[in-house]
Each structure stands twice: as structure tokens, then as C-alpha cells.
Length: 303
Image (cartoon, rainbow, N blue to C red; front, side):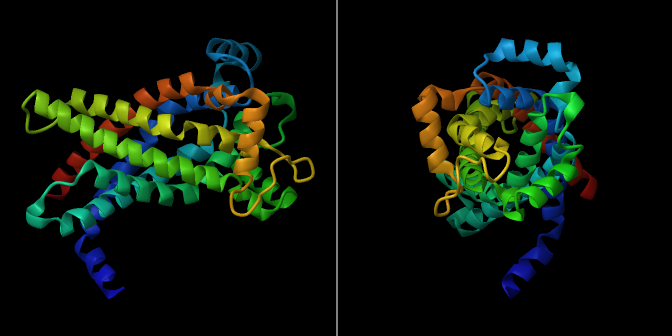
């Protein structure tokens, strides 16, 4: 404990920089990525394709419907992203501290650091996703069950029980650990290869954007089936009519997975994947670029 407090005092400045840059990244990621996330959730909960889902939303609810449920993510995702990058950078420094002669980290070690940051992120992401999904699924604007994210959390806790605020935690943990492991390892690998191919000491803006975009896609490729199960679990309402009840510590994950595969087949786990991939590339490209640029600017300011 004493060693950690000493490390915290010595690295307070760097932690502040990581948190601030992560916050900026989260804001840009949320603003640019939420419309496609809404489309992804709608496709996961229906059998409609990409274009039909877009037309249906615009026709019946209007263009602003793509931003349903964005308030809570916009308020919380920057903070969540700050934690992800801060934990990732902290984990990296632990590895580099143990490496002999300052050797660079391996991509496997990078993946481990990403998994650690993802596990920490899941503790907050679960409830954020719960409110986001419930609000995104409110199709009838005339009879809204939830007025806002906080009203949503309150009604879930009151009507379904406090523990249901963390509905889908098991699926969220799986998604975040696997996703962030792939994301950070891919980002470091692609960035390094682009710099090596062009024989440059520092990555260019194009390098950062491409690396961030491909990293985002890698994140969702390994975590998308878990996200589909999480969405189904979280969009189920009421305790009496709930089909997928928690067994052991899986939160209903296995039961829901079996039901989805048996009723609609394995491909149904990938509904909404096209919208997710589109969002994953451009939103994470912008997010990583914003992180690197803001981090450099803040470090110059402190220097």
C-alpha cells in the first residue's frame, strides 16, 4: 500500500494527463459513434437489415431518433474512457518497469494491459449500456416508459430490483476484456508496422487514424457475439416475464446464448454487425487520434 501511494505521488502528473486525454477521446468517440450504435441495437433486437432499419427509423421516428439514449453515455463515456486509458497506461508502465534494459513491450503484454483496462471499464459500462439500450429501444415516442437515463435507472431498481441495474455484467466483462485486449494490441501493432514501412520515427496523422480504425474493428470482431447477448439480456423487461434467469454467476448468459442459437441460428449473433463495423472504424479512428493529439498538447502545456 505504501509503495502504491509513493508511486501515485510520483506519477500524479502523468495520471492526470492520461485521464484528461482519455476524456477528450471519449467525447469524440461518443458524439460520432452513437447514431450507428443505435442502429446496431435496433438490428440486434429485430430481423431487419442495415438499410431497412435506417429507413424505418427515419420514417417513423425522425433523424434525431439515432441519438436516443445519448445523454447518459455523453456524460459517462468520457469518464469511462479516461479510466480505460489511465489503467492501460498504468499497466504498461508496470510491464516496462520490469523489462530489462528498457525493452519494448510485446504485443501479448499489450493485450494483457488492454484486458485489465477492459475489466475495469466493464464495472461502469454495464449500467451505462443498460440505460442506453432501454432508451434506444423506446420506439413509441407518445408512450415513453423512461423519461431520461436517471429515470430509467430509478425505475429498473424500483420495479425489477437493484441488482438488475447490473444486468448483463457477465457478458459485458467478456466483451470488454476480449475487445480491449484486441483493440490495444492491434493499435500498437498496426501503428508500428506503418511507421516501419515508411521508416519514420513518429506516427503521422494518417497512421494514427488507420491504426485507431483497425483497432476498433478488431475490438468488435472478437466481442460482438457477447454484445448481442448483452443487449438481449438488458432489453428484457420485468422479472416475472424474464426468460433468461441468472444461473450460477453467468447472469443468464449461457441460457440466452442457447436460446438465440437454437431459435435463430448462429448467424443471428452477428445481427447489426455491419453497422457496428462502420461505427467501429470511424469512431475509434477519431477517438484514438483525439487521445494522441490531446495527450501531446497537454504534455507540452505541462512542460
